[in-house]
Length: 551
Image 1: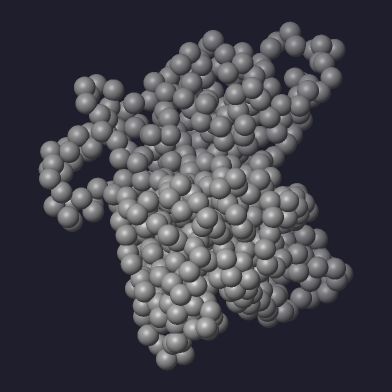
Image 2: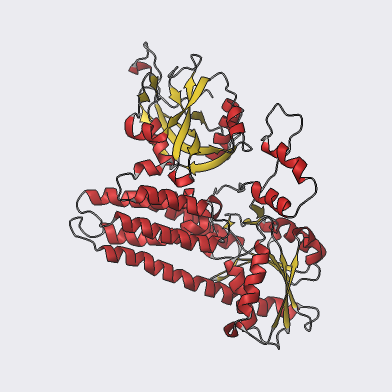
């Protein structure tokens, strides 16, 4: 790292030597550990003492920082990971992305720079990862500090251990609990909300967005009543930042859907809160009613998506089948509330004259077996009198490895979406890509159909990374099934694969993967059929709204 964030200590440095301002984008990486139970834990952060070989602040404690390099880094997160590898030897196998902080900018007249800082927080996956830290020439040692001490007592340093300037400001942006300590009871509730969203691996994107909206309402309620006078603008800015953290630091892989639920609420609240004179009181009930109305409106979106899919099947699938007497054959996977409701809607909308039965093939979706859960939910729902129809539903559950067999003779493969990128690529449950590839190869005439609401379309530049969860979800199923060799394998896994081992075994538990737009035939949302151009326009609109609301 040769670019630096802070003012150099140079006795001979004069203002006459300052060059015109240069803009630099840098990352500030905090490594966290949590002592205790999640939201109730004591948060500690690793800070690194800068060596005498660096040009700025030798002997000061700092996070791992560095400038972005456009030739190497497509995003600030890539910069963060690269700097961590170079300066600590830690990689994604040892670290989990914990929080993203909202970027901020400031100018340093002494060095003639305008800095834009992207703060990140990472969690060490294990004690073994901590022991594998290897420092490069820029740092001499490192130690743990209590986050609360830095934010509340000693933002500039503790004893004879000075901190680099702006450290507390960067840290507060990835640890908002410290920033909201005096904002009603929002600090502990915000922490619980972020953990709830982060660890919810059962709800689909749409369901999780509704949960996020309810959590935001709860936090908003705790911050009321809205103050009058000059304090109102500051109150509103802090409310917006609570929403920002729910979007960015709840469940990142489902952030597009969460953002879509929050944006219209924030737009309406902004008008309600800021349009009247600041001396005019605003009723708390009126503010909360705005959120309640948005939650009711979300219920109608699924109905419109279901209608759009039924129309597509009637017009584009059924008339083109080679044998109209055979069942409508659909392949899907995982557990999506939108797909569940869409299939139930098909059963009650199509007539026996259109199709006698639906042959639904569902991949089991390891390791949490969401496909099995979907099968159970559909079976139970279709047994209810209100959902019964003259069309028969035949469900067959396949193992994930049987995707090619399940794809034989299907009319369409139906997948949901947790995110849709601006280029039309779709992030969905891992297993989606091999299922689509199998279907395209085995049954070329089948259609690949994405069923999603528009709210899952992300802004341009959204990371195409993957979400990874604990390997225990995978290995625990081996133990439950008494898989041969698990007893011999577990001790190797428990050693965390340190560099001293001759044999290493890793277990990857990736939750989502991307299906390229070139493999998708149709995008169906509440407005009907969409094209990639439609998605791109929507993505640009989302970016405009983000910039308007949060900047």
